[in-house]
Image 1 (tube, helix red, strand yellow):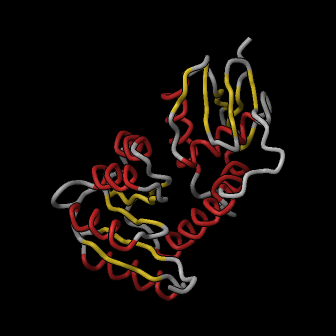
Image 2 (cartoon, rainbow, N blue to C red; image 1 turned 45 degrees about the horizontal axis):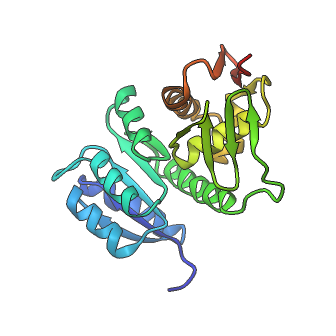
Length: 228
């Protein structure tokens, strides 16, 4: 196989699947297609994609179950597509290992930009900082080399993007980080269209590590609080 990146698109609406696949192929990706839950899991095992674009609503079993099964076999970045702008759906998706989501309708150009951003982030994460010493903030410990997080001695299991977001905030305790900066640094996006994505990942971190850890600064962004 050459150095082309492989993307698996799991989407039961044929027209959406074909237009996404055509756009990704035009960008130089190899693309596999699946149109239901079981087919998506099988295609992920067979093709070992670098990234999966995954619809939430699928026949067979839904995208959340596909994500769970795929991530259990091998960690892979997942971009979820959802027809409903429903916070619960999105948070559950992020909780089972999705890295990002888009609500329909979306522009194929925006989808391709997000695919590139996720793959760039995976490449960056594979090269830990040379001085990868553990960051300790109050009772929170973040180990960037092993990519492990503990709070009060208890380990928390984070998705790759949750880890990157927490590590970025923990390295700058008490400093308020605007959503736009977090989008640029963690997701690699140049435009501020995805601030809801940041909000959803912060909610997931609060659920896993405690609501008191990250402070919302209304109209600006977020800051990691240092527990006294």
